[in-house]
Image 1: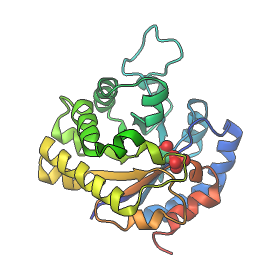
Image 2: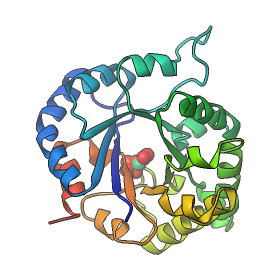
Image 3: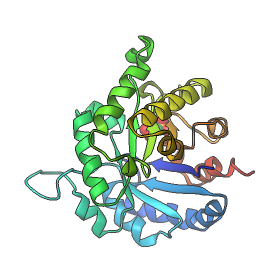
Length: 253
Ligand code: PGA
């Protein structure tokens, strides 16, 4: 049986002090979650990453929200993978729709980051998802297949095994308009089938797939109870310790 994985994407929220306070409240709870085979993670801002890695236990994964594919160079404003490794970051979110939308990140950019992250042995959450227009045109699976094929070009099937995939329909992020469980399950099933065609059935069955987009404590369990959704990637509802805990506790309460 696959583990569950719940990750809070904090985006541009929480100062270092906020991060410290959040961790004080959440850390004892993380051990409880691990006993229930739930992997927990947060993705704070770059500045709060060190606060998080210094405070955290092995029961809470710390993700960066982005990275540069190259180890160093003249790239003003960027952060490299060796810099993240130096402070003990566990993994990186790649291809979040806000990165694609506001910073023009392409599937090819994602592919370069994924390759470098694999080489560095950091964990990866690769986000895919369609815009509202693509959804209304019935193009969801075509868009996602392209994101997967181009984003995973030349990645070894064995390397894919450890990756996490997040289906995040752009029209449901931060809008309160979450995708229905039926849609989310069916797209996550489709993602698993595409991954099987890129690798093999065994790898595709092992890979963890999350749903993200307006997930809240009130609706998390319905996604987490489906066959192909192994976790959730949560923005707004992950910022407050009580709400983050409630998202996780629904799995055993
Ligand atoms: P949301 O964000 O939960 O606030 O919709 C999800 C995400 O962007 O990962």
